[in-house]
Image (cartoon, rainbow, N blue to C red):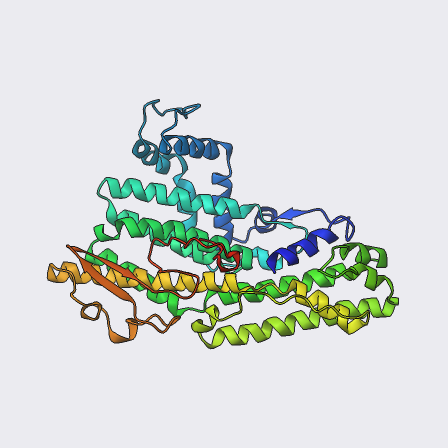
Length: 425
């Protein structure tokens, strides 16, 4: 559904509002900085990792990690540098970006993408993922040199950053999930090196996150407004521009544009108003359903219904348009559910490891370290699985149909059914 929404907007771009030049979120967010919006610091951090100097350094690190002979070596680095040498130098070279993230986290966040339209460029989101990679590289260096507490504070900063960028719209949400997955993978490898006080910080952060309104629902609501706004903008064009915007075929032998062409000017404008109303009503109904329980996030149908093929009446054409641009899909909702499960697992790991510090042994049962209310995954209604194995342990959720077992380091099960794929992982 997201792709159809964007396709609809892009189809309109060449003809509708030609006088409106594309504008990036960087321009929108930094044109008139207020100093009171943490997203401004996020964007300034994004500019650092968007620089050619960072990109060249990142390419060099990829070559090192892959065992390749680097094509060029950054100034100040040795030709025989190790990947640890490269990560050790990240803080001094690009640490300002991480300082900006921490400063942004301390402020309220307003995401300018909530005001985006079909001319908006989201080029900042790739840079946001680079911030997560930069931060985890620095954390690796901290762990390697015995600074586990410093690494943990940085990882929590990155999780807060990922949460802060997740509420703008569904694209932002999926990038936020990807950033969180990058950070969670580091915790999966190194959480057992944290002290009692650092494990307590992890648990407190997760509790606060799970107790706050889910950014997923905020992103759905923002996407709703964007979809309504996109249709509204298209239908403010001339008759010819509107017809051209709907030149794509939605599975019918008669295109929407062919059927719009037959309508009077009054009926043509009515189609836009009815479609906007239907999109808003449908998403509000979905939001009410999703707010009832996180378990509902995995119960949306995997197969999205085909848009209704109707006659040439105003109502039927509006039905077809609204059905084609409603933004939420089951796979996105399942991504949100999987992320919540991993957050709960992160907290459970912290509790298990705190128990190990306090008792000098692993808990025999998960219930030895965790209160009864937290033993069950509220999304699936099944108990979290805990297995002790030769001085170590495994902790996971059984997941749901199509997800496979869910651990901190998630590996998507191989499947030929693309409808089961979970975006962001």
